[in-house]
Length: 282
Image (cartoon, rainbow, N blue to C red; front, side, top):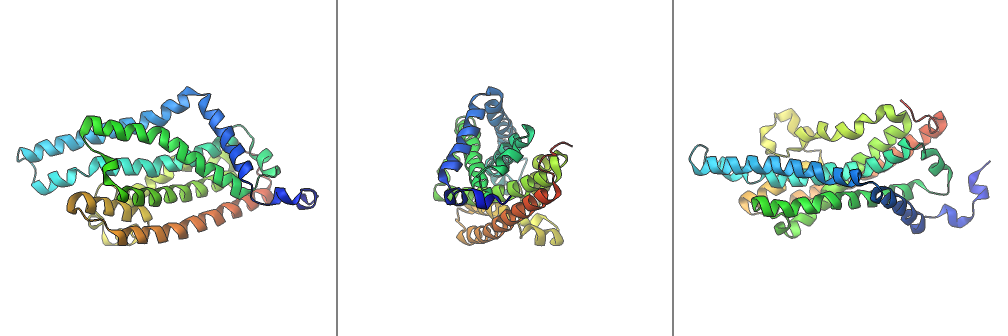
């Protein structure tokens, strides 16, 4: 039976109400489980402390003359890079884990047989990505001020440019990973946890692009986060806001996000044709 023939026209248009209903469902799930909330804060806090103490050591070694002044200055970017990396990583996890909750509960087929449209599901996942990110990210940035005197919010408007580009990248990767899990089942779940770390060395999170060999530099220049972290170093070391880098990152993000959304729809169609929506096991 053609579902379009039996559903009312309102069910076939984009509905903010259905998006809000999905977000409400995810919020209830998150609110009812303190281990989930604890996990959102615990790992960002551990990362912040680790890189913060490393930055403190490098700064002290530089002041004592054990390191060059240039290296000591560059060390001041470590905790900032870690916090921006956390936006990228936690943004993707917030998107993908909310989707995996449906897979784990074997509810994906029910959702996709309902009037809920793929775009509405994606919008709800993007919203939850922001919610989950805020729960873990905001307290850690405040603790970074308290423990290490590093105020990420002091970057001002630059932080907004960094955030938009990083969150768009995280959603693109989340879409791709969710589509692969949808098509190939939970056997592809490991991609959710590892894909971002495969990209980390090429995104030049903690070192400049010039460190990479020339062939890898070409690959790195195709990744939007590379321009964000280069922009962070330019801001902290040379006090320059590189709007050109932010523009290049944004253009690449738009292309990647559009490609990821189309890929998600294609993988969803393939899953429907292959009949894998009800086979969510390994």
